[in-house]
Image (cartoon, rainbow over all chains, first blue to last red):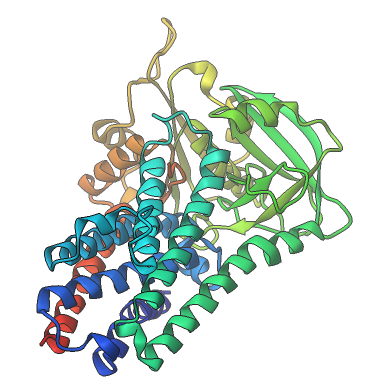
Length: 441
Length: 30
């Protein structure tokens, strides 16, 4: 797995710096300029190729996602997007420093060259895209609208970036560079076609149907779906799928949701997804879905699964809706009659927010499961754990041999950060701490 | 430490890309 990861990272680096190698060998019309200018141009090229590969990171290419996990790819996508913006910023600053007129920053001035106008508009699209992603909640932009604008702005930034580079005809005046840029353009278009057309077409051929929609504790709904006229899929406990409730799977609105039912080796089985009310879709659309309603499921995805990460026991630490994949792991181990110990730390604000609490109680009698409920705002007669999942609490509650167990952590970002730090403090090796993070924007 | 690992990788790669740009500038300057 490590070797395959290294190969993919190596390929990523090579694809990003390839235009620099080509430009250094065949400089076209841009040879022999000032060093700061050449450095600025290189930053522009690297910024553009980083942006193109951003598309690959989110295109759910199974070969890549199976190595790193789609959530890790999304985190990396977010960080490298900011890196691309910084590179483009350095590019623009150095071009101005080298004598480009400030008036070229206005893309609406008819006298400005088209290459510059496209370049400025591409940068503006990138800046707006990052601004919306970092401030989505503050701007009260719904996740659906953010997803739509994010895709459109990304496509715009990349297409205009290409136009800028080709029309400027500096390094891109050389035929080898044009050929390389043509390959990248085909790669970008291919990725978009795969993501926007091929994948949805495959989903369209395999619809799913709502069998049951039941409310759970903690402003949560469990959707039980069954494959309609096809064998569905099998999954590993802890994995997730992209769920779309739009009329067709071509709609941009899709949500990563963990399976909460037990994994089964038989295809065609109904699968449960548990969704917490967090926004317009989860709070408005999901509760209104009636049995018989057609939905679209793209999965399974993810490497946050107990099946791939074997150990003498499992420690599951969940908060809020992060309980879903952990509940799936508990149920699966229970259904298989697995004798290994499982300790579940389940943090929530109130007792009423403890989704699945009755079913966890039932499971306790059927398997080697210990549940530690941690409440931030407990009822007056509460005798259990209070506050947060802290280092001290973990130290007190973990069994003696815990360092050899596998740890799965899923919940709100601040909780996951704190728990990861606590586990490291308690001497749990990093390779045994597994996380699933999906709060991206 | 997955989160830290990803942050470190992204930082390292960005530094590597900037270094590549510098080498490119050295190779193609006048």
